[in-house]
Image 1 (spheres, rainbow over the protein chains, first blue to last red):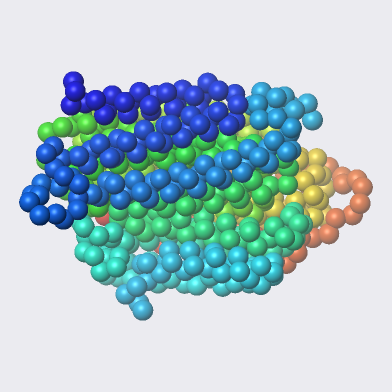
Image 2 (tube, chains in turn purple, brown):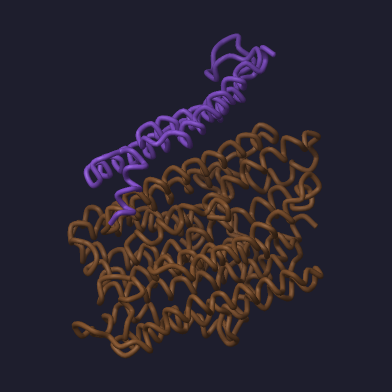
Length: 115
Length: 490
């Protein structure tokens, strides 16, 4: 069981994040959920890169077994993508707040229906 | 130079985007964007001819050979899809200036071109690359640009539509990322062709099934496959008209391309169907999409929404073609991918022309336009006939192939479904035509749309007629793609 510790955390975070996105009506809280969901995938990738007994993928004397550096590079890219998504989303929320005066989903939908 | 065409296809719009930002002045940015799109169209035609003549092109990015480096691979399937995206992009960008002048304040014009080019580059990247993770990056480039494009819309509802699209789109892309993570940890490669070779030999077929489930659900969100289509009608009806024309004709098509690539080439449909009857599921979801979305389209009062919902229905046809699983079905899906792109480009550019002159796209805005804007409405009617699938239009050709494929599989209910779907399409199209041609216009006189909008509209409308009569390019191109896909794993 201890071998799968990382993956248990990943699944937990993933489900938590998705649940927050769906259950919350507050646009900012939804984004927090989305961020947790994305981060869980980052941890998933990094966990798959670990080679048991391997050291960090930096060439040093005496080390023969290295962890796989590729997933970390991939996730570096994914993190950048995540930041871009999050900043765009927050900018949208800011403008929604200015246009509707609220960041609650039900209030916004109510306003759209009435006009 | 010629050997770099595969990468230039993506690099040209990608570099043109920041240049438009620097140019700042709306007109200069527009002219430059036009230049970039036309150049890109030229490249895609050259690639299409090159692939047809001498087979797939492989380009090692930065000189790193596949499977270690990122490979750009243009084969019969990708060159076919690239051609469609480029045709649509060129048509849309030419008309964009006139439409934007009527819809957006001047300072927002050059951001529109920047976002448009980024989205264009991202979509082309998805199609051109042979690397599964690179697909994710391009998916996000195009998606982020799309969210911002939708948010440019005039109404404040555009903001909320963009937000909702962002949530769904990000979840979809992340699902895809999880699936690729599984596939990578199974095979140790990210190159799609390499993956396709390694996967059948693996013992862990259940993990392959899990990976496939994540990938498919992720793509289905982007594809707006029923029941994951909720974001599409809002996003398409709120975005600036020309952005809608481009997105409706290309974004969902690229998602379908990715889906076909994963389903037929990387994972292999037989291997997947042995684990889970995915094909049948697609048939079911596609059928529901055709009926429900078309019925919903009848009740809409905004013409943009009518066509957006009709897109959801048409995606149903595409998925049915894929779900049938035979060569004819796949060819029908590819044909409809191409033809539906042309149809929706024509229809949405016509709507953009109406919005440009009348200021809105509600049904009552169309009153009497048959007389006031004869050219615009003429183009729209041709597009609409093609949407219904009237003989001698492109839409007929693809529906005909779909019916043939369904008959080959002996699925007669599907044949009926295609006919019923076309019948419902006739209804919602007729509502618009009736208002435009048989109801008098009251209020101020309306003049014909500007030439720069009529030009791309009629180019698309005539393309719909042309590909309905001379099918050698579309049928030939899709046949090559099918042979390639079916041949790669018999």
